[in-house]
Image 1 (cartoon, rainbow, N blue to C red):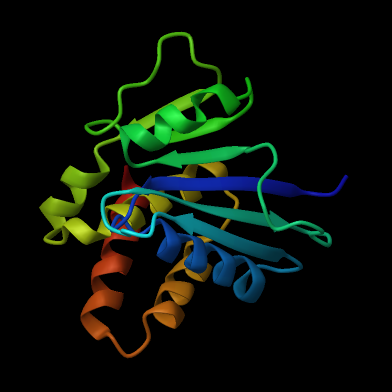
Image 2: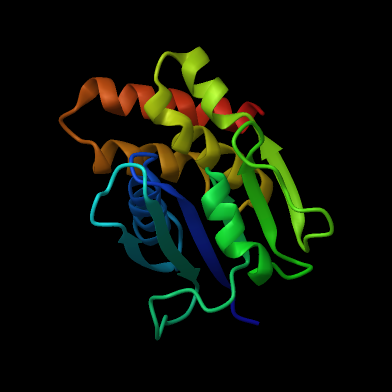
Length: 178
């Protein structure tokens, strides 16, 4: 049986869901054995504050289409993102959400896992790294991507920006602890 996971990372512009998607793709395709990845993103023209999503597909086989048809894993960093996808959740969908920004819908399908991503990032000294706290929790819970590969991919993606690399790696490690 081939492994294929369709992942939606969603929030509002400025929350870094595109950056997390890029890191996931790098980690899967460069640092995990025999995995392929695709990523596509869409966001409002205003960028900050409008709905943003990134589709990531990770598979041990070929990926024929880069957009998520039926999400296995969803990250919702804002209520608008959760509301947009709640009807697409299946019983086996894993829904990660910011517990201080998102109120889950009563009776919604899927396994809901909430963490205070934004508060954790603020406690670490960088509100911009809530996305990487989330990536840490997702990696730990799903086992889809290894910590070592994600840490290397963060370095690749933000190479040359030492403080950004350190901040995002610290946030990722915090997510692994939650």
